[in-house]
Length: 290
Image (cartoon, rainbow, N blue to C red; front, side):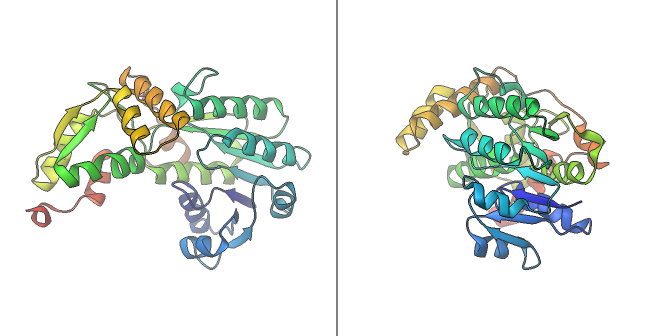
């Protein structure tokens, strides 16, 4: 099984590559910055410099490949880029494994990026191209490590826009493992797989877990999704992206991403990683914070 990985240097792509390498495969990646990709993924990776919006680059990178992992950066024109890849691959017969977004938000009137995912999914399903769609819930690496922990480390507080609702956060490594498994195995062809962590957790629960592991208080500060949007705009975030995040937090606050699936276990044969195990990895030990 030969695979081309697009989006190989983001939150998920490196884990797809690592899982395929661990299985004895030699995946190919197409990236804009080949030097950075080699530093991140290893010198033994087949790295092709190119841009997914350039049809000639896509044609060259996909030659001899039977499966393409389709992931592109979150952005205003994300759908345009992905639809261009699908069009370019339509006569190649290559199977497309698309990484989409939070399942409850993939609707024609959902948040901005999710509307784009919805459009790409519809086109892919109707294209006649072999496909698998992966819909992961929000990543632990993003919502906890990148957004929650820096504020706590700086001032001991956690901004909570979800109220009392839980969310079944998933580890990006589990998403990578599922992607690699479906690249390797055709059992899930023509299916949409919804991926979550093993349980839904509230921000209050996460705060308690952080405090217990570090010996430092983690005070919850209640905010609204609208306040999150205003904060993002004040920091220079484009209006469309701030709107997107406000709508996502409104969905989370309504409990729309508290559902749980066992898809990670079904596909990989191992359970999804827990919030507890993730925090054990990323938090400093109690003696280091004293």
